[in-house]
Image 1 (cartoon, rainbow, N blue to C red):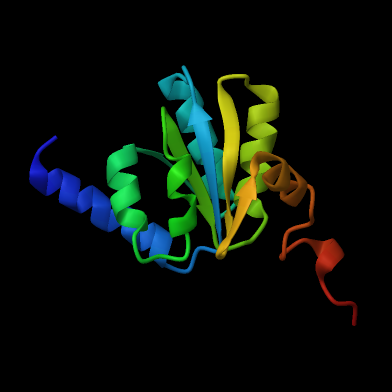
Image 2: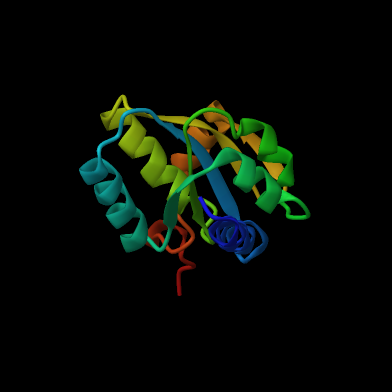
Length: 139
């Protein structure tokens, strides 16, 4: 990969990590096909989330100075990230997809600056979304 492309990728990832996203889920996609990754990205987009396969060294560089920096140790082996402003949405989709496809494993993540292990991400996925009708105030 050319240096300019690497710099562009680090800048793009830094915007994800340092932007308005509240949730970051680190996953291990081992052997996912292009069609499976495309399907997962589609599901994420429909829920207002993002899903990106990362290069670990570049992701660790992009994490520096962001609220998600404490999860940099999770970036080993094949890694992809799911992220969302909604503090539940990306976790819900990633966990549901991993439950149905052994090729994707949830490694952990972060909710704002709080580091989450895989079990905590799974627990978070079971909570209702902010825009869920069950969490809306009654009038």
